[in-house]
Image (cartoon, rainbow, N blue to C red; front, side, top):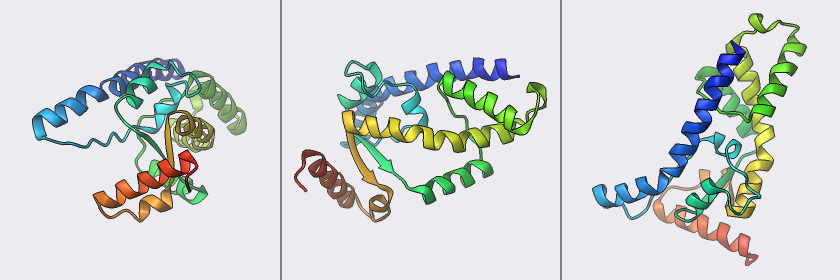
Amino acid sequence: PFAEYRRRQDQHRSAEIAALLDTPRFIDRARELYGYQHFVCDSGGSICEVVEPANPADAVLRALSDNLLLVWIRGNEGHAEELVRRFRRAPKPMYYEPAFLDARWAEYRALNGVAEDAVDPDDFVTWTYAQALAHRQPRYAAMAENWGVTVDAEEVADVASEADVVEMVARALERRAGLS
């Protein structure tokens, strides 16, 4: 069972990278087919697991940053709790870096005193998701620091229009440039 999960994780990684690298093509298609002048790419949280934020030659981040402004929406503990609650209600596929996943697998089994074949898969993925939220924060921060900007979730909650989005991102760019 865990070996199969790991195999599927490898497939998920490949698909995640391919989808992210397709983003420039989708930007072009949105412009050509629908006349869209602006494109929002709401990537999955697993993006931080398939890139190297400190590497200026990272192919995925380079492709994205050449075509988009990466914006990290930084949440707080309350937001994390809400995400876990939603995940419990409606789990979705997630990709985890192999060393992180292996460590969580061993830790979960030790904490619960269960053999590999006795692990409740739903409980394991929910527990792992909660662990991943904290684990990913420094990765998201590095992506924003090296490749984009940061906005707080509270700022996003105040957005009601396209103009509000532009203003919010402009403020984030000013903060990054040290102008505010």
